[in-house]
Length: 530
Image (cartoon, rainbow, N blue to C red; front, side):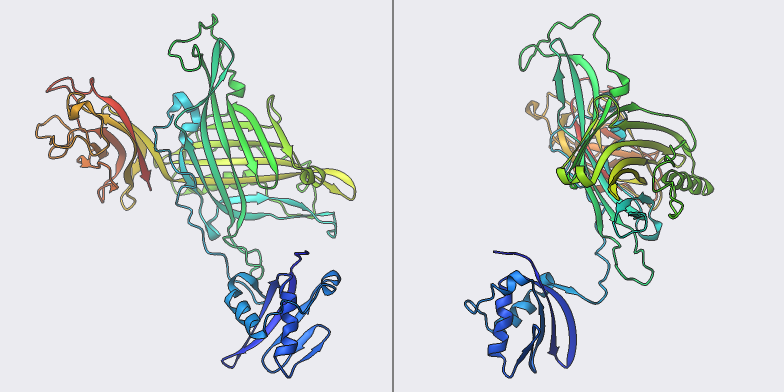
């Protein structure tokens, strides 16, 4: 049975007021409309308009549907009206101007952090270790994202239009509790993994009069993985514990292919990009400019801003506020590099094919001791313009701030610098997430415990970071301020304090009463929310 929607307009008096709605009715509802002619007398019908004192309904339906109208199964007009009114939130699309979409919550992780200890650290993840956590960008008029998007349109003067707009986004990078070993036979390439999930939203309305309201509307979504590769030994057998004798010398990882980005886009595109660590330095990075030989940049009919200049201006604006880039590093990957590739579904391949894709991500440490991410992403698309395959550039750029991250605290180490600076008026919240440890394996029947520490053993001696709380609990410190208890949390850093956040197990750090940290076991992961 056809499922084409049928457009209808209803005008119903209600408490001496009139309102007009556009509705989409399923096929069955066509029968309901004709029931009004029978049941709401007196009524007239002319050119698809059924009317009387109570209701006026205009029906527009396709020719093949007209032939299928049948009196069997008719609903009463009263039931029809009740059904329409009860379902108006889902079925009605108003002819009047609609309000903006509800602002999304961009402070909540899109991917849950694993409840097992994940593989983290620069040894395992390289520069990707700085990505871990949830990031977002400013909304509304303060939005930092900028997009250049050409779109094919046969009615346009040049056969295409441009849809350039500011945007904001949220993205979560999450490590996993393991890796993906690629076995050669004598040695292994270990793939450390960050899963990511991304949502992108329109930042404002293009029409200042409020028509076509799109602010806060989702415009793009994708997920995928970032990979970091290292070469190591291969287990003997499926699970070890011995290793296969390695070749001598053991091969080294090709640094030009050490990083991969895998993308899945709901348009029907899958992308694999390959690359390595890129430029490093201080000050404002030299962002790669768009190739102006491609449309829409080479068409003088369009005013197109190079997204690279948007990133530069944002850093210049920060510098004017006294905040500069202390140092930066970057990762560059491309589908054009050896091992990269793209797959498009049939429709996309014919009409809007992704030809190539490259992206560079910058990890920037600022002079206020915060870290931000900036990125440029360039997609080469191929449209059919007047029957001729024509390649275009679609470019995104944005600056991201950290919303929350995760940090692994090792029981064998004293105070550990999280790299997070706490400022007055902007405290952070610390919550235990996963893992177990012990400050003394001879206590608690040898069992490990969480961040609350060893129940029943309260610290009373000096030499421990904090007295009056459990041995082995998680404690924190902001700069040189007094130590505070965290445990399983959530606990907010003390008000008014400033400095770098450090975390530690509550133990005899200097070995004054025994083995100190040397006999400790385990580690825990904590969630740090800004």
